[in-house]
Length: 213
Image: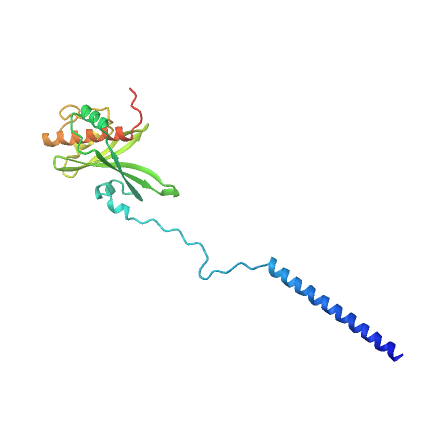
């Protein structure tokens, strides 16, 4: 009887030991599986949020002449453009104006407004020198062609400058004819008229749409 009890106890212990071993192995596999399939992403030290976009500076605007900024007081930004006048364009401009092209590297200044959240061009201007004066010519576009919106020059009678308003590249720029001196010295009037005429012909050649007559 004692022998039977001992054998029974040994059998129970063996079964219990086998059950414990199986449970531990299952637990080990589950842990390994969890570690394999649920690997946490590596952390990055420091701030991981995306950096804010850098705000545009106004360094470029420092190269814009004060005379141009004065014309476009509401502009938030400007762009300076350079365009080369070709030999054929230069010949055409000189033929139609009767004056020399002063420089084949033409500069113009575009003004932009950001009102309403959209960047929009509000005008263009150029600077020319004539008769010892710096002339600011403001342009607007009509059907893709440049027209003079305003001409400014310090120390020049406003009545004379007003006559350039609305002129296009096909118009006459003849002092004593369609342009009255309005108290401006004749030599200066001719110099300013010639410079403005050359410039609008240049703007048409470089930026204007097809000239259909």
